[in-house]
Image (cartoon, rainbow, N blue to C red; front, side):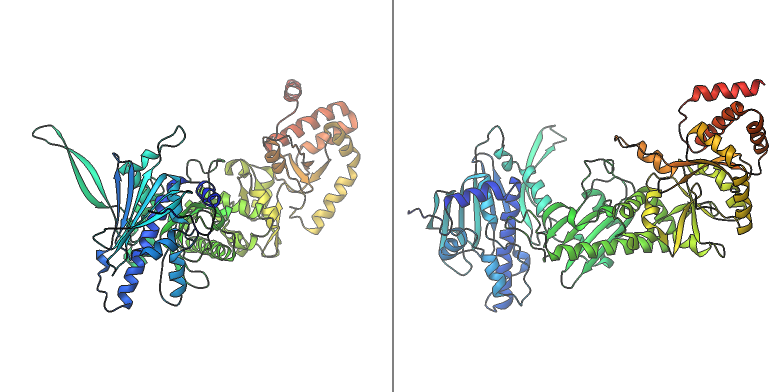
Length: 623
């Protein structure tokens, strides 16, 4: 028995491969099972192309065995097997892939082999101190055994084997404080790994599983061992949609993604083209418990020909659709040699763009055809759509603007921007909106009265990101957005504007005095109010609501909107103010502070000097 050195690479390369390429030791079993599946594929393909070979696809299998006494894990297959030369080339040469060669030789024929790089087998050295490979090629009489303890090299000798195929025996490493290798002799651990990574290998993966039953007569516990098929084999997403029931989808989703509720929407599609893939995605009914926490990780599961490659592939899913759960199965993505990490390439970008478009179109269809269901979705995940617009800095506007919903003062329900624009009054050039903590509070804002009297529709914005979203949109269907608490929300006629301008000019000295008393941008009359005496209006890009949102954030950043105290020109308070300006400016200062405090309270802003304001109110009441 002569020990041989690995041909093309040094001991250091193998050492780096074992310790650096793979970051997750448990994937070794995925690699061995994938290789076994490839070996069966090759023999099955031979049976289709060689009339002398008569094999039934149902006879193929992969067998996984654990032995706690010997501390070994064994993977068997009845695939094509290897002769001495192939053992030398495939296992003695690092990064030599028999599967890749097979695919290249049959590039114009239908093959779906998984292995590509010839390094997956060596991942078994992460958990093994010695590996034995016993193989007999289909049609040959001789069998061979390949042995290696890793970097020291390997041996190949003739041996006996009754049937064709390959048996890989892993002599597991001894346990350490950091790594428990003996767990890979636990049948339930191995069963879990098969289900996790190789559930959709198309050949049955068999294991002997131990079950305990209590004998009712004797009361004794009896142990039975049964051979069971562990994997599902046929992925749900590769089945025809007509063959899959809603119960099938619901069960798959709830089992796989640990949800107690059925999904709100199922998206099942198959795409063929430059990049082909199958996808099965779900929109949850409720947000996951950690959805709005920093621990939540977006992404779809990525499979390559039914083998799990990544549990969370974030590159495929845009942030604004991070609530979507599901998977993508494609033979076309480029993987690195460990098959653990996705390469950043054109295929991924194509898949990501296609999936984004598919999800968006499904949401648009839901909005159009299942309005009640869409509104349920939007109440849960609509904030993601809004952030998609805001964070996208305008790039996502066209894709997402028609998915937005806001509460309508006229319809008393959620409406789209398109619906708002379609019923705008003739000559109306602005989309009016108002911000606040709740619909009820917004509905009581003084600024809403006159707009509603003139039959203008107002959108009520209750999420802190809403106004930022509309500012990022800037326009919808060539209509600009106007905050009814902003300076550009007037609905006055030309004559009314001229009349108001004259009144403000006539009282400019009084307003200047009042402005200094409360230290704000300005004070003026307005015609936008009906019954209320005062309101606050903001000038510039920062609104009162933005000030509240930003200042509430746990940062040191503080901003202040440029506020104007507007006084209802037709309210009786006007005469009082004008009289005080002429006769008692000290009293006017008190009135001004009280009116400003009222306006701040209406807008939900804090009062800096509540005690002073309270004393002034009591003083005025007692007179």
